[in-house]
Structure formats: C-alpha cells, structure tokens
Length: 283
Image (spheres, helix red, strand yellow):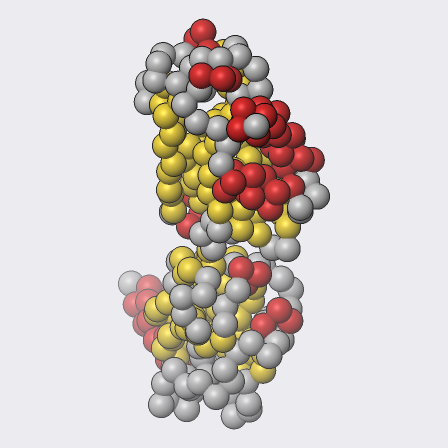
C-alpha cells in the first residue's frame, strides 16, 4: 500500500509538472467561407494557453499540409510570411497585447481563390506542441448563367445550361419539375482560376408536354451556394416556335467559345442554325 501511494504521488507530481509546462490551443478561428471581393482582409486566429516554461515558443501556420510554413513567429523576433502568403500578410497586425501571443494570427490582405484550402496552426515550445486544422474557401459566384432552348430541326430541341467565372468548381443539373433529364452531357473547364461549366441535352418534341418547363440549378457545394434558372419551351416546328435565340444567348456562346474550349464551340454551333433561320424569316 505504501509503495502504491508513493507511485500515485509521483504520477500526480509529474502530471502537474507537465501541465505547468504545457502549451495548448484553446480556440482556432478560421472563416469557413468568404466571398471574393467582398472584404479587403481576412483574419485567421489561433489562441492558446501556455505554462511556466515558454522557452522556444514558436507559432507556425501551414497551408494545405505543405512541409514548409507560410507564416512563422518566433517570440522576441519579427513575424515572417512565406510561400504563397509572402507579401500578403499584414505583419504589423497584433491579435493580443500579451507579448507571448501578440503575433499569433494571420491577417491576410486581399484574399483570392488561390488561398482556399486547409490551414494548420502549430504552437510549440522546447517541451510541448499542439496543432489544429480548419478549412477556408474563398468562393466566386458565377459571372454568366444562362438557360438556352434552341431548335436545330422541327422535331428536337437542344437545352443548354452554361455558366462561367465561378470558383470552386460548380455543378449543373438539368431537370423538369417532374423528373431529372436523362442523357445530359457535362463539361467543366478551368480558365485563369475560374470555372466554366456546360450541361446540355437534346430532346424529342414528341416526348415533351406543351408547354414544357426546364430548370437548371448551379451549385457550388464547397461554398454552400446554389442558384437556378427556369425556362418555358413550346414544342413545334422551327417556324412556329414562340422564341428564337436572343443576342444575349449569342454573346454568351461567343464569350464561352472565346476561351478555346471544345464544349463551348459545340454550344455556339448549335445556336447558329436557329439564328440563321430567324434572320431569313426577317428578310
């Protein structure tokens, strides 16, 4: 019993000693989602507690699990920004008046989509280390979003949903109020850090009610963002359909096609026959 009591006493002392020398992250604040262009700066904070022994206290931030940090602050020295964040961090920003916590946070200036990803904060001393990771997404809503109905002959209609200028990668779904459409083709292209997406399907007029309603939904899952377009179509021969492609439709096709993607060339070619037909009718 005496030996057991001594052992328990020693364990308690060891635990107390460890707690006195521990460093522990108590709160990590990283915005989950921010919209590009809405705010000039974003702050990522990493608050911690420390024990009596703070020798070698260092705060490091890592991006996307890279081996090298993008930010480092060694207490008693100036903070440093590195890698993808070099020149993009406000190194004068102070998150606390505590000299052992002063430069623990990142204040990133003009956040762009290229800094979307996981951020890991590591706080360490010569004795202890603690870390936490959170994700931040910088998202961009679509710049153009169009739902186009275009006839190339009397018996069919091409339904084309197109969007560009979005980040992260969007997905498009084409449906009617009653069912999801079969045979929809999808294309996705990354151009200058932004995504262009097209969903298209060719349908037989004989299989459609009159009028027929189409719904295209654009979703950016990582940003928890969604928007939709709706369109009404009246089946029938080209000469009797209620509407033809508009100038805006053609501008969208041209804008997407100018990026040099094969998917958008197809979109432009699909629109041309109907446009030509409408021009001939005017003459």
